[in-house]
Length: 231
Ligand code: AKG
Image (cartoon, rainbow, N blue to C red; front, side, top):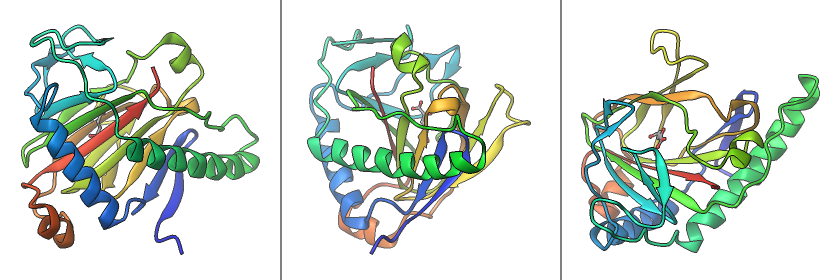
């Protein structure tokens, strides 16, 4: 039986609540921890669009450089190569995209169409770790290929650990943005007509991670977020 519930938030944006089981989350945390300590692992990035990044980051598949807003095979500051995306991660992403596509398709019938989400196979995963004071200003994801953005290939985001107050909207204006709480195990997908939505994280809610996850991983306070894209 599926223990999650899917909602179309707006055309092209789907939230799959409680999509990743605790076992899946434990596996993801353990793999990220191992990768994070090796070559191309977690570091503290500087700035993006002049805004300081309040998080630790690691890129899988390809490197994304926040300073230049470009993807590349190696990381400029230390020359390291991005680790490969674990195959299990991509399997979750493919399933989540298919699930979101069917939710969007049935919704599209009611809204006179145009709300479909195209399929994608991720070759990039950006892993962010937010401490309790972590946050990320409103921005668009627009450094992928022109083709990927024009076709609206979805960005798929996994949330693990403490909950986040996630903002999204059509403008870079926090006062006009809508809010969603992203909890551990939630998968959020934005593609199609929402591919260029502004989004960010206003705050991390302390002590909201599932106890079972903490017991099994000793994850430190904070939130792990993985965003998958196709270049
Ligand atoms: C990004 O990495 O571009 C994000 O917007 C991450 C959003 C999140 O942490 O939920």
